Length: 539
Image (tube, rainbow, N blue to C red; front, top):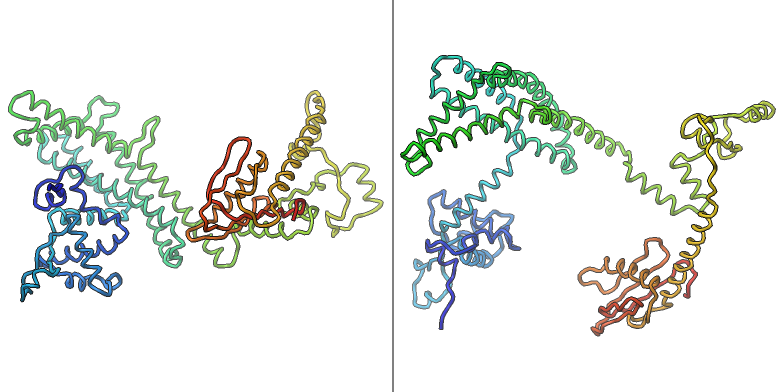
């Protein structure tokens, strides 16, 4: 008898596991009970910080936070067993509490973190910490960058710059700039999330809003002033218009120091060719960093500087915050938003008694009444003088005035140039009317064909023509969209409100087949009742 090797066991014994088995220590993150596994691993991490190595299941159970602690120890013991199988924990027999031979056969173990499990927890801690960073718009970093650029410019003005000072200043400049860029990116991302999630805590958002706007305004002002100073220093270091670029020499000095410090076995090696390649690689790295710094503060003909984009984004976030505050205030004062207005209008349309009322509501809601106040011809003016119209007369009760469509579009009756020929569209209108009548007849026939007049099996529907089959698929799709787990009966109405389908499950497991000229549709048989709500089909 042979047995397959356990990759997880090999990893726990210190042997690198083949393929992806070494990543099994992250399997507890995607399981249904991942919250408990994370808390159990947290207990072991805290225990190691207190120099406690082994833990028993009841000790792990006692160390869990109260909200997630199970009432019994058994779920914790099962979680420990699973974590041991994934390689997060090491399992050893608990022999300290053995008093009889039969105790050896009982399930008693102590657990401790494996090297892989500890590494996974460290990685997850770094991940959680990175996600929790909200960032900041650091005006102090701008001042530090300007100070370090002035120090570089001063060092370049000397005949023999101090190589150590130049190297350290460039390192500090790059580190400060990288911190500024990372924090700015994290801050703008967290700011947008704050704007998007303002509904979570309205009071906290309103209290936070004033401080945030003041903070953004202060940073934008510092970015304008410090950004201009930094841009001037970068232009001077790049030697724009002078032919002499101090930055080149400074970057070469830093690259030479790094190439000289290369360890044996690195590209520098021992011969001159390897040393030259090491110098070239170091110089390329410094040039790349310097170009990134310049692109942040200096614009080109086709690409704006990143600082300008950051300033625009920070400036644009202030109106967004104010708009959010306005929406919150409107909600608090009881004002409805546009979506609520449209829902109210839809309810009014549904409650209107006839089509004429709906047309009047449509014209009133969207201001589609004729603009009679734009023009009055002489005949109308004479008639108004003989028969004055009271100012309180409703537009709906007064006589309508026919005006030219050109007046609505351009504000003038006349059209310059020759008058266009009137195109006769009567043929097209007759064709469209005929198509509409034909389509309405086909839809009515399809509704009449589908109306069952009672509950029948899907298998008893018989053969359907294309129009009836298309309408049947729409109804069936609407019904199945409402069908969830454990559902045995559902009802759905077509989008136009003319048909209703009532679908019920059958326990016999039969298969229904609906035939059409284009093929057959098969599926589980159901009881179906299709009702024509227009009253045109059979009841």
